[in-house]
Image 1 (spheres, rainbow, N blue to C red):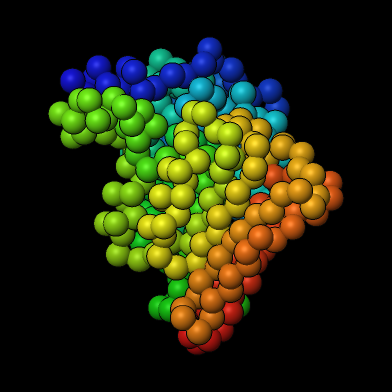
Image 2 (tube, rainbow, N blue to C red):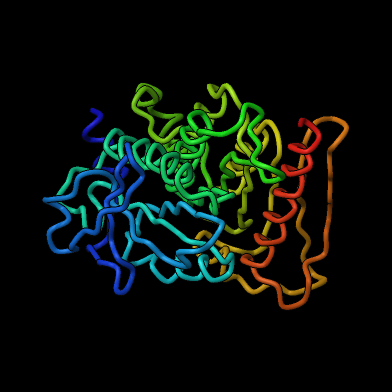
Length: 319
């Protein structure tokens, strides 16, 4: 039954290799990157495979997790844009069964194994790379659950000071989730209702991860009200479960695939975000006007900056 559900869940596109971004295998024990050759990566790679984008001297490291009908080749432009807009280095993970790993079998277990290895490797990489002060786990659609898994793994095992701070910069990973769901079956509500016996075979359950986590994870959710693939209500449901610093960006009229590129009209739309750093350090901004000429990308930058400001204040107040 699990195999049948997996075949229905995973929908990789025709494999496309990145045009310009180099591919590396990440060593989970050392954090080192080993260069891989795209044509042989499926057979020779040891460790999770990432494409590397952006500035090698950046202080922010994005870990990027693509959606279901994408691979590293089809999302290359998006990752490059993130690297430029946020002055970051980006590592984009490929999934088993997708892209340059298309001759492997796609499964939740295989993907989670690579995510765990990647998070372990990043801990080692950051420990050897003092310039890296911020880790952002960025996921779209299917990738939101994978990003959450990566952040929880990283935050649980990071090699930082006892109170989780390094100077005024927080060491915990922040999750950015575009069009997230609560679990894979939640996007097919009617199927889950009619066939409850399938629920034990549900996949990528973000609500399960949040409810079972010992620590909170800072998180930003961005969702469009016209999303017909992952209902907007699922993003709201996931948001309600987040304990700690969080933000929610509503893009009125945006659909599943145009969140970052969506051009927004100033004055006609608003967005909300809430950042919480303890009862005495909460910030709530409601019905904030969207500036003229803004896009989903610029709103995301605004909210991420605000979230990091709260996290930095929290660190200073606990030292």
